[in-house]
Length: 152
Image (cartoon, rainbow, N blue to C red; front, side):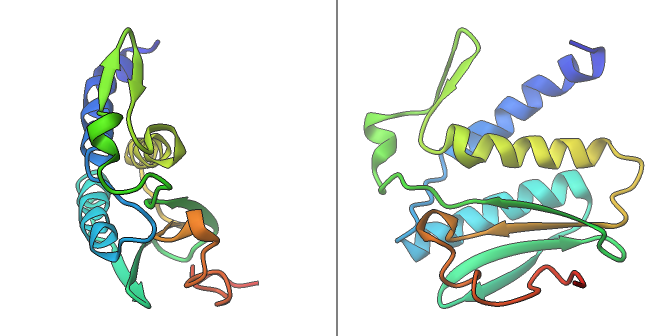
Protein backbone atom coordinates (compact mmCIF):
# COMPACT_ATOMS: atom_id res chain seq x y z
CA UNK A 1 0.00 0.00 0.00
CA UNK A 2 1.34 3.43 -0.89
CA UNK A 3 1.66 6.16 1.71
CA UNK A 4 -1.15 8.13 0.07
CA UNK A 5 -3.46 5.12 0.15
CA UNK A 6 -2.65 4.48 3.81
CA UNK A 7 -3.49 8.10 4.65
CA UNK A 8 -6.77 7.96 2.69
CA UNK A 9 -8.02 4.64 4.08
CA UNK A 10 -9.38 5.98 7.40
CA UNK A 11 -11.18 8.80 5.58
CA UNK A 12 -12.56 6.39 2.99
CA UNK A 13 -13.84 4.04 5.69
CA UNK A 14 -15.49 6.93 7.53
CA UNK A 15 -17.14 8.01 4.27
CA UNK A 16 -18.28 4.45 3.61
CA UNK A 17 -19.83 4.20 7.06
CA UNK A 18 -21.68 7.48 6.50
CA UNK A 19 -23.17 6.18 3.24
CA UNK A 20 -24.05 2.73 4.61
CA UNK A 21 -25.84 4.00 7.72
CA UNK A 22 -27.98 6.23 5.50
CA UNK A 23 -30.50 3.65 4.32
CA UNK A 24 -31.56 4.09 0.70
CA UNK A 25 -34.17 1.52 -0.26
CA UNK A 26 -35.21 1.95 -3.89
CA UNK A 27 -38.93 2.02 -3.11
CA UNK A 28 -38.68 4.70 -0.39
CA UNK A 29 -38.47 8.15 -1.98
CA UNK A 30 -37.91 9.90 1.36
CA UNK A 31 -34.95 7.59 2.07
CA UNK A 32 -33.60 8.25 -1.42
CA UNK A 33 -33.88 12.00 -0.84
CA UNK A 34 -31.86 11.67 2.40
CA UNK A 35 -29.32 9.47 0.63
CA UNK A 36 -28.95 11.96 -2.22
CA UNK A 37 -28.13 14.68 0.31
CA UNK A 38 -25.47 12.52 1.99
CA UNK A 39 -23.93 11.35 -1.31
CA UNK A 40 -24.09 14.88 -2.71
CA UNK A 41 -22.31 16.28 0.36
CA UNK A 42 -19.59 13.65 0.12
CA UNK A 43 -19.05 14.38 -3.56
CA UNK A 44 -19.12 18.13 -2.98
CA UNK A 45 -16.52 17.87 -0.22
CA UNK A 46 -14.17 15.76 -2.33
CA UNK A 47 -14.82 17.32 -5.74
CA UNK A 48 -15.17 20.92 -4.62
CA UNK A 49 -18.57 21.39 -6.22
CA UNK A 50 -22.15 20.56 -5.32
CA UNK A 51 -23.95 18.24 -7.71
CA UNK A 52 -26.88 19.06 -9.88
CA UNK A 53 -29.82 17.20 -8.34
CA UNK A 54 -32.31 15.93 -10.88
CA UNK A 55 -35.58 14.62 -9.42
CA UNK A 56 -37.74 12.57 -11.76
CA UNK A 57 -40.99 11.08 -10.46
CA UNK A 58 -39.74 11.57 -6.90
CA UNK A 59 -36.40 9.84 -7.48
CA UNK A 60 -33.25 11.94 -6.96
CA UNK A 61 -30.29 11.54 -9.29
CA UNK A 62 -27.01 13.44 -8.95
CA UNK A 63 -24.75 14.79 -11.67
CA UNK A 64 -21.41 16.56 -11.61
CA UNK A 65 -20.03 17.86 -14.91
CA UNK A 66 -16.52 19.23 -15.25
CA UNK A 67 -15.87 20.96 -18.55
CA UNK A 68 -16.90 19.22 -21.74
CA UNK A 69 -17.64 15.61 -20.77
CA UNK A 70 -15.43 13.00 -22.38
CA UNK A 71 -15.59 10.36 -19.64
CA UNK A 72 -18.77 9.22 -17.91
CA UNK A 73 -18.55 7.60 -14.46
CA UNK A 74 -21.81 5.98 -13.40
CA UNK A 75 -22.98 4.70 -10.04
CA UNK A 76 -26.13 4.49 -7.95
CA UNK A 77 -27.11 5.32 -4.40
CA UNK A 78 -30.20 3.14 -3.99
CA UNK A 79 -30.10 -0.35 -2.48
CA UNK A 80 -32.25 -3.47 -2.45
CA UNK A 81 -32.17 -3.45 1.36
CA UNK A 82 -35.59 -2.52 2.86
CA UNK A 83 -35.77 0.20 5.48
CA UNK A 84 -34.81 -1.15 8.89
CA UNK A 85 -32.19 -3.55 7.52
CA UNK A 86 -29.55 -1.84 9.66
CA UNK A 87 -31.24 -3.40 12.69
CA UNK A 88 -30.34 -6.90 11.54
CA UNK A 89 -27.32 -6.05 9.36
CA UNK A 90 -25.58 -3.13 11.10
CA UNK A 91 -22.51 -1.34 9.80
CA UNK A 92 -19.38 -3.07 11.04
CA UNK A 93 -15.71 -3.12 10.24
CA UNK A 94 -14.01 -6.19 11.66
CA UNK A 95 -10.63 -7.56 10.61
CA UNK A 96 -10.61 -5.31 7.55
CA UNK A 97 -14.04 -6.47 6.35
CA UNK A 98 -16.81 -3.87 6.06
CA UNK A 99 -20.39 -5.06 6.33
CA UNK A 100 -23.79 -3.41 6.09
CA UNK A 101 -26.61 -2.77 3.63
CA UNK A 102 -25.21 -1.68 0.28
CA UNK A 103 -21.58 -1.75 1.44
CA UNK A 104 -20.37 -3.53 -1.67
CA UNK A 105 -23.03 -2.54 -4.21
CA UNK A 106 -22.59 0.32 -4.61
CA UNK A 107 -21.63 2.48 -1.67
CA UNK A 108 -17.97 1.41 -1.56
CA UNK A 109 -17.80 2.09 -5.29
CA UNK A 110 -19.08 5.64 -4.77
CA UNK A 111 -16.47 6.27 -2.09
CA UNK A 112 -13.72 4.92 -4.34
CA UNK A 113 -14.93 7.00 -7.29
CA UNK A 114 -15.04 10.27 -5.35
CA UNK A 115 -11.67 9.71 -3.67
CA UNK A 116 -10.03 8.71 -6.97
CA UNK A 117 -11.37 11.82 -8.70
CA UNK A 118 -10.19 13.96 -5.81
CA UNK A 119 -6.64 12.69 -6.47
CA UNK A 120 -6.63 13.95 -10.05
CA UNK A 121 -4.98 17.28 -10.82
CA UNK A 122 -8.30 18.25 -12.42
CA UNK A 123 -11.56 16.40 -13.10
CA UNK A 124 -11.97 18.38 -16.34
CA UNK A 125 -13.71 16.28 -19.00
CA UNK A 126 -15.44 14.02 -16.46
CA UNK A 127 -19.17 13.64 -15.87
CA UNK A 128 -20.30 11.73 -12.77
CA UNK A 129 -23.84 10.40 -12.82
CA UNK A 130 -25.32 8.82 -9.69
CA UNK A 131 -28.64 7.11 -10.37
CA UNK A 132 -31.35 6.87 -7.70
CA UNK A 133 -33.27 3.82 -8.96
CA UNK A 134 -30.76 1.47 -10.59
CA UNK A 135 -31.74 -1.49 -8.41
CA UNK A 136 -35.24 -1.50 -9.91
CA UNK A 137 -34.13 -1.07 -13.52
CA UNK A 138 -33.72 2.73 -13.70
CA UNK A 139 -37.33 3.38 -14.74
CA UNK A 140 -37.00 7.15 -14.24
CA UNK A 141 -33.67 7.45 -15.98
CA UNK A 142 -33.15 4.68 -18.51
CA UNK A 143 -35.68 5.64 -21.18
CA UNK A 144 -34.42 9.20 -21.36
CA UNK A 145 -31.50 9.76 -23.69
CA UNK A 146 -28.38 11.77 -23.07
CA UNK A 147 -29.03 12.61 -19.39
CA UNK A 148 -25.30 12.80 -18.82
CA UNK A 149 -24.96 15.65 -21.31
CA UNK A 150 -22.65 13.61 -23.49
CA UNK A 151 -22.80 13.68 -27.25
CA UNK A 152 -23.31 10.54 -29.26
